[in-house]
Length: 498
Image (cartoon, rainbow, N blue to C red; front, top):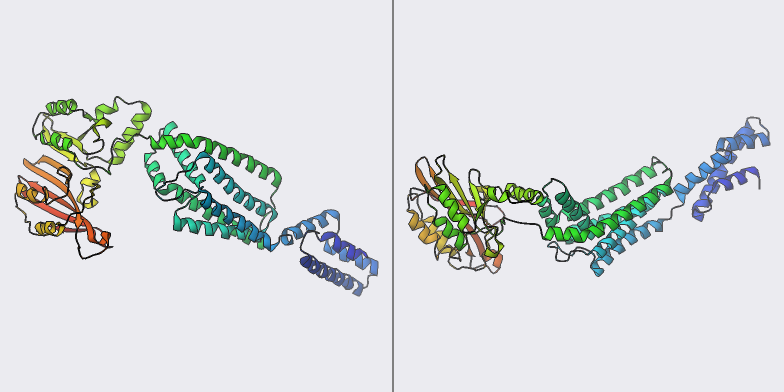
């Protein structure tokens, strides 16, 4: 072979596809001979023309090695590698389903174990290592294949709520560690976490991985992707750090799960009706009574004010309790009383709140859900859970339409607060309030009813609806009445007493 063919053979890698190898050989050989013919045509002898042609091509071992590396980056990748990489990503996620390693539903009936979490971390590592390896080697098609596979996986998560358990564990660990060992109050995040924060983080992670794959593939195609220096060292460091994080997260998870499940909860907005005991306490406290006398009565009944309770707590528990007070948003200007005694089984079910004047007289009292937002008429329905379907809802709504301002309080409550109301004797009200305003005694009630509204409908959800009633009285006479309901996609509707 002559010097030109030797040169061309020396710069073409052996590990690229044969078809591409032949194309490169023919193209480079033709280009080299064109350069030689050019120099011969302008008067140089054959040897000199050959030397100049090779110089133009880039002679020298350093240059040839550089050209060979560039050819490898461009042509060594096989198309089937992209399908193989995508198949691995999809197969791992499908395997998750059949082995129960996904968090299997939106209501989290199947929380992961430390073992399934570690397996999930390893599966994610395989996908990340694929991306890192393809980036280092500049395998454009492989990156595209992985990106498409991640898009399909993310789309499946959007439809079926089946996120990888590694995200479940990682998010919970971070939240619980911050909650326990920093001044941060993280109960809000714990609630969002249970409601799907980890699900969202899983989707975002997959979306970012896909975006990275597609962007790098474009940069590689345009020749703008830089060669990764010290690639082996970086891959080794990444692997070591990832494995350490996976082991630590999986080991911490049992503690985090126990911490989240045993998180103290003093107030529960999902069970906020008025029970028999709280109703009795409310009725036995009168406006203009001495506040200290009322406080002694509540204390003797096993109740405690939030201000007094805070003084008994350690630093961490105080942070949690104070955070829940802020989160729950009790009405300002009232001192909230509750029972920390779980044996009474009314924890979070009907709070007592008292307001006092400068001369220590009670000027306001409230019971039930005294959350500031829930007290507002714009908040919609309460959270009272009633499990009995009534058949007289139409009659009850007709009674509301017949109300007029100035009706007596006892007459209104005789209809809406008795057997025509909701099921439970003490459950139909979830807020009661009485207060003095400008010398007038005002009373406020919120009631909840649930039952058959459209009996001709076959579907339970179309037939059975809820109604929330709100009544305000001044000196025993009705001044305002609203009925809130949501029977369609228009959202919350309101009918008011004329």
